[in-house]
Length: 182
Image (tube, rainbow, N blue to C red):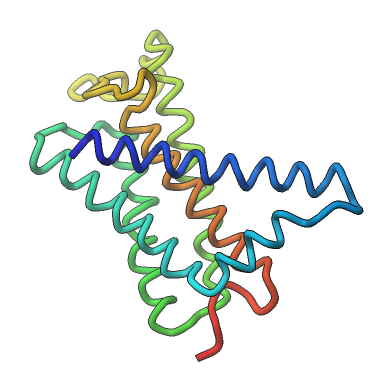
């Protein structure tokens, strides 16, 4: 299961990278094709569902790791969960209601979660800082697993938060927002 979640993390990272490169190409060449707009047109009709799916998989993955694999969450893991878990509910309700304005709630929460994930990931890499922020019972520097030489739990969370932010932003970018009119 961890290998599968690590694979999904790489897919999420590649998707975000494609969007960032497309944005750069679009900014660099005003007369060229607009790749970001093309991506947004494809994603927009199902953006809410895609963002919800990412949040749901991230939530279920974190529950699997703590409940099935017994990886005890550290304080920063809890903060990331506090940012991710409500996204499942917010995006789920938005899917049911066709709420185009949900991005105003989702984007700040996803970016806050991403910032916590970045801090947590760098803390894993530079553990001497831990005294500043974490618990002695369950240190934030504990690396329960590492896939592909860099994917840990905070990297998985970061990738999910960024993909949710990208999907909701791209969905909102195309025409009428991130949901089709019902």
